Image (cartoon, rainbow, N blue to C red; front, side):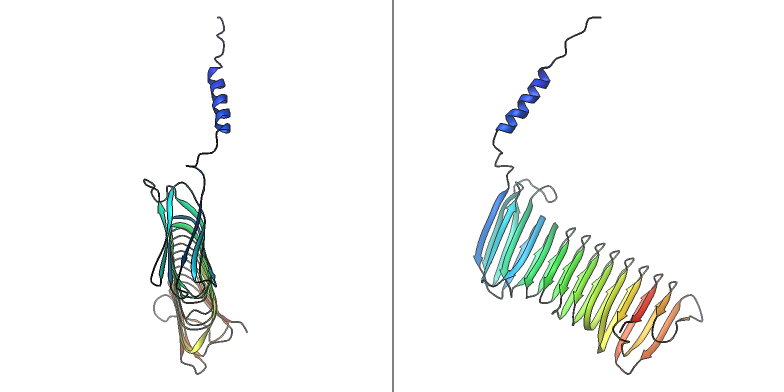
Length: 305
């Protein structure tokens, strides 16, 4: 059978298209857009930032103005910066037809007056905060949250990790679904709630502590004020509490099927009726109270001088 010549036209055509594409300048539609916006702002006002995807880095500085710099992709129409009274907003506006999760990423650095209060809401963006001395309210869906704030702190997340320092906060509240939490603090009140995320706390002397999880682990190193209260609760997650010295407090520690270990106080006892182990005792003459309970998770108490 006679051989037919191989048709080389498609190959030549594709090669020509590739060469032509290489020679054509990159289209502005696909190029990154530079952002540089600046507005005067109240030195102790509120700055609100909203975004969908990418990264947002909020930094405090000593100027009475808000500055936004960075880049966006073709899915972003513009970045709006507006001021009304003491309130400044930074809003990422998607291009027409672009839906969240389908484009519209930004990489922005937002400078704010150091004593501002900050409120940031993002979807899948990585959010970082530093040098902000005012209160911070941070919300995310799947993005990470990290940094340090000087005022009260509130974080709400779903699956992203939270790594924050809030040494001067009077009140700290963090809630996640599956995101892990690592918090460094000092005094005041603290509340952490997770579903399956692990939570780790390094703190000073606190007056009110509430730690709650379903299946995630809880680990805290802290001290209590003379009349402080600590409540820690889990379903199947483990709970570990470490104190610099045994708190002068009333202790009520119980688990349904897990184990209890303590390096101070009496030994845990099995319940007389029904399943479970319980440890009830009073340490010192203080008015503090410690209540810890799990369904099937283990509990460990220790004082490390």
